[in-house]
Image 1 (cartoon, rainbow, N blue to C red):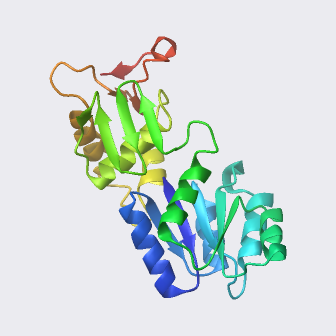
Image 2 (image 1 turned 180 degrees about the vertical axis):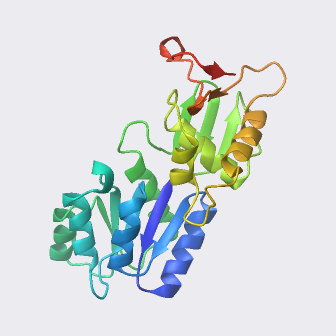
Length: 238
């Protein structure tokens, strides 16, 4: 999942981005509202952590613009981060379109719990534990297994599997993976997606296990979902 963190406090921005990357999220940053709107206009973020009080375009205006003119027609989830803790301030933030409101200072564990909650509000997105067939991903504990076997994934492999698990049976293109699992520093002309998916596929399937990750020729990849297997179209290489 890809997150944009917006805050004009440099130390907090750095701490939040580093912490969320350790949690397996792809994270971009912006230190003012103008930069946030620009990045949101060309990247389909799954969630934006947005500071309320900033010079120039503040968080309220950023939130309102993203709600009235959402990039690509789909507004991102917005978690407002602010030192303003009055009831009036919270109501105002929610009224302009924020999905949740977290008052500074806050515990990092609470921030990540709220992010997981916001992401799972859309069915098929992300929750604490995702299960597809015999593959289980615990997003809170950062543990992935198949039929009880620990997969031993790297952070990036875990992030890719989490994205597939949130969309079982759906064909996912390389472009989608770059948009949602890699950050703005990723080189779109490298084979990093293909290599990561390849190593993930090998870890998911060992011995005589049924292949879990399919290549759909000319389209991308698909996590095999036994619940919908009868409805899937052809073209897959398993």
